[in-house]
Length: 488
Ligand SMILES: Cc1ncc(COP(=O)(O)O)c(C=O)c1O
Image (cartoon, rainbow, N blue to C red; front, top):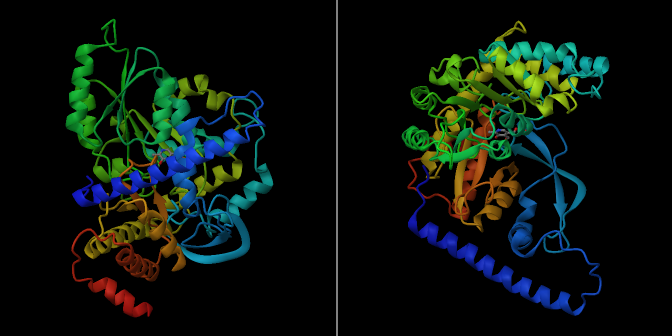
């Protein structure tokens, strides 16, 4: 729950108002100039009309150097960020051949598998030689290798479901699967802060979509009761089926889903549950099995478990795990399975190897150590940030921790100053968040050492003072000071 201070809300609104007014003024003069020299109009309507790209042109481009920074190494705990410059007030950015070694607080490399790993990397290289980077074929033609079937079985065993199916992209997993599960006459009830891939999948399904207040089982129950009583629009017939869609860890909030309560409501009203574990699978739970394990939920109570390989497993692609019947249905009906090239074999091998390390099937206890480390690192970092007076969202154990910035001017100030001090952070603003709720999203990794975290805390604290984002009184910062002394 964000506690947006009243004055902060006012100053943030004022800043956006000012940017909007200046943008409009510039657009007005731009139109005048274009009107005088409008000779090159060839009868086509402009691709972007009026206000459609206003936000990008007049707000985003001013600070675009804070986003999409190219990197020149693996996204490990430290990585090389490519230096860029602009000669036209940030409208275009030119890459240089220089890089800066920065502490990486932005990648979803939760377990540290995205960098070279003694178990995974040699196996991935071997699979690259044996299978090549691409199968050049869809799953139902020549795109199913032994690795694909092995991973489907492994994923099903890992998450505790009877069967699983793979997709080449996490985003596509949601956006292509949801329309195969439900359509016209069905009802999707979606958490208000669900990821865009879920939103697009739900819209594309043709089902009626209703939203419940973020992570509120009570509001979910209200919506369910109201919708079941009313039935389908116009005909008032009963819904053909109802699916409730939630995430394990909300990627912009770092909050854990109130899964046990939500499942209880779904069972009461006979609604199916669809759980997106993109950020939680591998990252939380005693043995990395995600929020079900962490919150004591039986996977049998979740009807459809979705996840991605792009976070904890350091690879790419996504999966759906469910009953054998549902997976069979998806294999016969999902266009992303029938018509899209299958997951790259080395990417599949990376996930197989990472899961084996997590399960200890590589013959070491590195998986258990990584899981302990991510938990310790996340909880340490979160509690230190809070002691410093930052407004930090999310729950304990979650490796995602947003630090609230609010004001648009604080987005580039925070991002650029951290980068200057060799700490790379990701800042997130509208449309990925509500307009007033811009934030820096810190992602902690098991590969961060205590020294890395102390450096990060030291820099973030100093930049936080400079930018003015410590919204609460600080506790005496014992550990942070110790870290500061140590680093100096
Ligand atoms: C909750 C959620 N679902 C799905 C996705 C899409 O996954 P991918 O990036 O692997 O395509 C993301 C991406 O971050 C996500 O946060």
